[in-house]
Picture 1 (cartoon, one colour):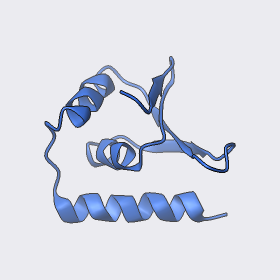
Picture 2 (cartoon, rainbow, N blue to C red):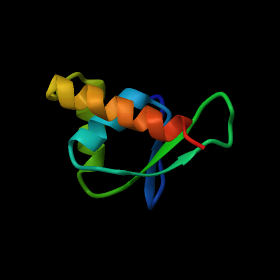
Picture 3 (cartoon, helix red, strand yellow):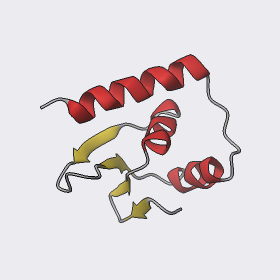
Length: 83
């Protein structure tokens, strides 16, 4: 899990596709850390299942509906680049 860091409350990732995939499966981005101008971190609340989704993502074992996934990427980018 190269871009993913976990602490007690949030999973943090700079990977846009992972963030969109987690949103597809019902997670939400609590905040976006833009402290580093070159790399944003998406903060996603932890629960007991999130690590399973992350592992399956990196093993290419998850299936998503393509249009919904693409729309989530657009929504996240809009949020990322606004303000």
